[in-house]
Length: 180
Image 1 (cartoon, helix red, strand yellow):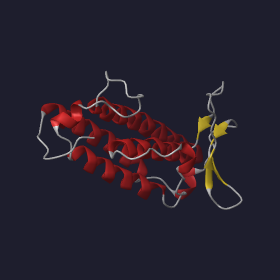
Image 2 (cartoon, one colour):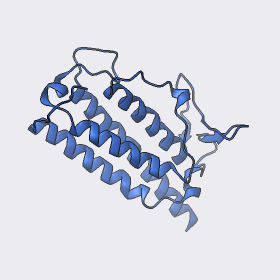
Image 3 (cartoon, helix red, strand yellow):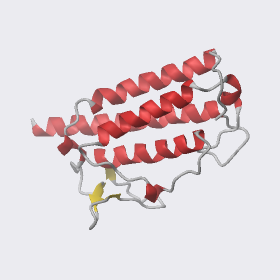
């Protein structure tokens, strides 16, 4: 992303306010999660994250979305956020983006801290943007399509985070209600 002395614009401020609102909605649920919430399986058909023989957490994944779609666990969703946000940050920083298999889930005791660290990194990257940076061609999630700008990428991050916040929140609420 093009950086330099940031010039405040209404577009930049709008994207930032959207992000802050979305993060507040996710953080509302993150503050209330217990480690055992992450691996709760809400249905017989679900995607989760499991430790391999070496202790590395490995997410369930398919290149082509199965039908029916498995219900994700909070663990899987928090890994998914880590994956797409880490790759967005790689692109934003001009780094070679990591492959999906390179993004490890941090586990139920550290997942919330990991998401908060990603938030801080993303906020810093967005805050350094200039108007010219917002207008640059987006490096992700589109394959260098000149119709999409970095501002579009930031809007995509906001939308993806909102979707994942809603999914995590719904799972947290269903689990809490099922224990009552």
